[in-house]
Length: 130
Image (cartoon, rainbow, N blue to C red; front, top):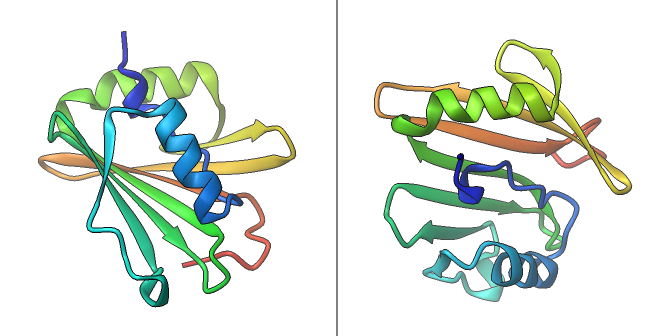
């Protein structure tokens, strides 16, 4: 069974407070590292206690999550892609769409030699891009 910590993080659209509450309630295995100063709120960095997963939560100037990047050890790749193919709507190679409440998300996966990265963005962007 795929650990819940590898499941895509549907945080885009949330403000910093909502992100913090969601992570504390749902992903307790992730710890906020080096919290930024209020003036430097470009991204939040969460590390999994196992050390094999890191989540970056990128924030807009207004303090809203614009996208997330989950970096995961390559050992979880096959089961992650299989789960995404089962649970999410395919939208291209290593890309899926997901509807959660009022938001629709684009989930994309990029692979390198030692890890893979899952990026989650709001579909259509609403001005929230990198």
